[in-house]
Every structure is written in C-alpha cells, then in structure tokens.
Image 1 (cartoon, rainbow, N blue to C red):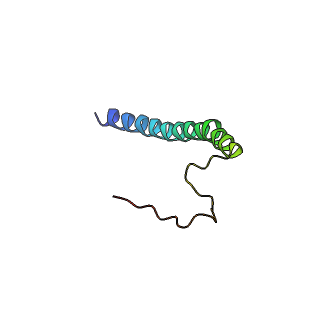
Image 2: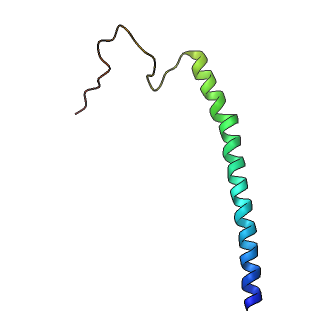
Image 3: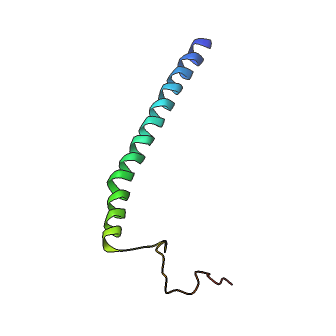
Length: 66
C-alpha cells in the first residue's frame, strides 16, 4: 500500500511539472502568434481602443458616469 502511494505521488509530481511547462509554452505561442500581430496591425492602422492618445483640442478627458 505504501509503495503504491509513493509511486502515485511520484507520477503526480511528474505530470504536474509537465502541465506547468506545457501551459507556459501554449500561452507563449498564443501571445506571440496571435496577440502580437493583432496589436501591430492595429498600431499600423492607427487604432487606439484604450484612448491613450493625447488630444490637445479636447477640453476635458473626464467621462461622466451615471
């Protein structure tokens, strides 16, 4: 019984390690192959979805809510 528990714990730790590596790789691939090109295309087209550009002609940047 003790031997089975140690073997299962060892296998669980190996799988946990592999899972952590694979998730980082998948997220890295997603970021560099999907999000980065989309951001570059939006920048080239002049899109500013967050409204970060400074507009000197605008009187105020205050947004009235409610």
